[in-house]
Image 1 (tube, rainbow, N blue to C red):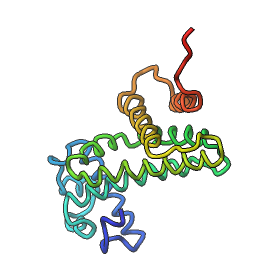
Image 2 (cartoon, helix red, strand yellow):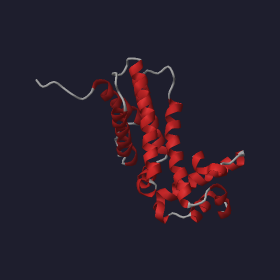
Image 3 (cartoon, rainbow, N blue to C red):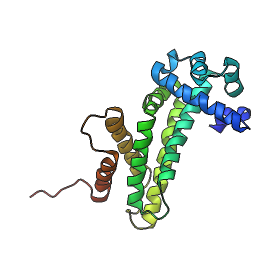
Image 4 (cartoon, one colour):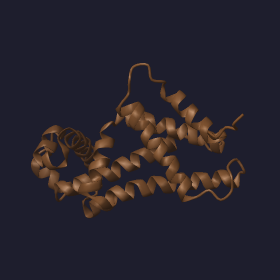
Length: 204
């Protein structure tokens, strides 16, 4: 996000609070109206700040959208980091990281619409979002291989396969949640069991 703001990065706590209000308001505005129907005035009204204040932080609607995608991507990473502990084994890390992602998505359901729109509104941000998350997962897989909990040689294909599983579990159990669905703990446990044991069976 700081890269998007450049010299407009706030230097005071008050400025950082105002920026947070703008980003939160933008998340609601873009999620409810879509990028093309969303407006800067709608964002500032929702944030409770003057229109001129917006331009203290952003040059355009495109700029705040890019910053929002970056902010959401950082939020996903922060949620995982805060849930993890250095003492956890590699498999436990993946289980806890998935649960943290599902919990984050449940609190920020707008992330799915906004990230999907980024593919067309700002493809560079869209690609950066997934490449950043994929790189984080790949790093975890390599650490798991180093500790001999995972197979050696795991890399980008496996990381992106795992990311795809997590994204679509969020779509099904957060965005399309149904009564009677298992809780996030159980979803993460079952996904983790699949990672540990695979799904192949021997025919009798």
